[in-house]
Length: 215
Image 1 (cartoon, rainbow, N blue to C red):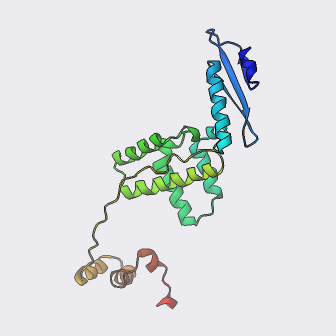
Image 2: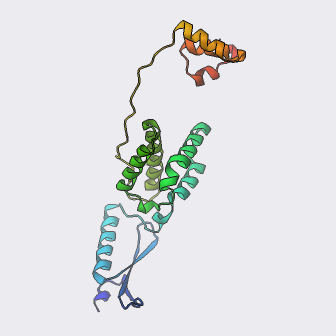
Image 3: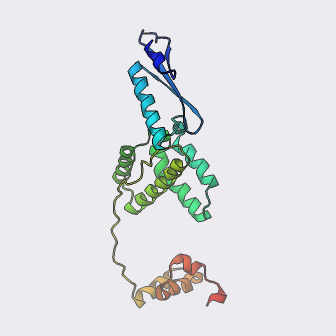
């Protein structure tokens, strides 16, 4: 009789051990139906109250969407994202090396701030550099931010998680003798590049992009 007070709650046949089952069903703000089974009527009612509250606050997400694994969501996101090819390769390589092994098989809804913090700590324990950890975290945060915009997650569990700070080492320019020695040690075709890098102050990407018309 009590279940009839909310038509969204249904009594299911008892489990084999005789324990009761109650199923709550509801329609989300996205037009999708959600359902979940509980061991008591009170738990089912409490869940529906939380759903109603989230819908009123605009934070509701359908739990079925959150069952998608992070690695699957990343694959679909990276294939459609508007990125430069070098950036796409960086993201894909970093995800494969540093994110997928620990988090790839997690369902999106199962990711929490504690999970992300543990992952960051794990990378540090494995000897991964602070700069690489920061890049990996930035990629994870960006992907999960997209999941929030897609309505898959209510909040981004990677947002606000601290990462190790990389220590900035003072740069030591080479002396003229060291530049000359380095140029002598490389194949002849690369000697001009060594002198350009040593005396023009260009980064390797900038020097590699130089053409005859630029000089």
